[in-house]
Length: 168
Image 1 (cartoon, rainbow, N blue to C red):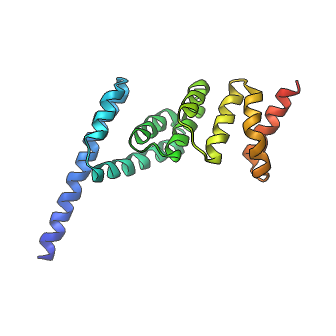
Image 2: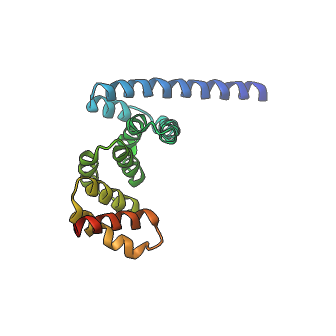
Image 3: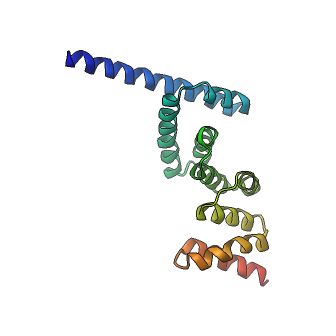
């Protein structure tokens, strides 16, 4: 009996993995063809269990691509996750990939359209603004961050860069 139960569990896991692969393929094709409605419809048609499995699967793939410095690929995966969950972490992961892809204007627009209240969100918005030569806007965001996080080298670096740009 235990052997049969174990075998059923393995088969069930295999089927769920296949569904996740199929859904990822459908969504990747929708993303490739810029069919956002198709992606949203595809996500919305999934069960909650499948969505969670898919998010986990996509998250692992995205992290792997990001660590390999394949930011375009990671960006596409993080966007798929964002479509499902839209958490502050999903917003910042997607925006960070845009910044690494030097898509600063898109990052600014995306972040402004999807506000969050995390320090990472504000830092990324300031960073993208700085790259867009919007120094004063970046400084407005960075100044409170510098005061709140004086030991964060990334915040300090961008604040210093913006201050130098402002004074030129």
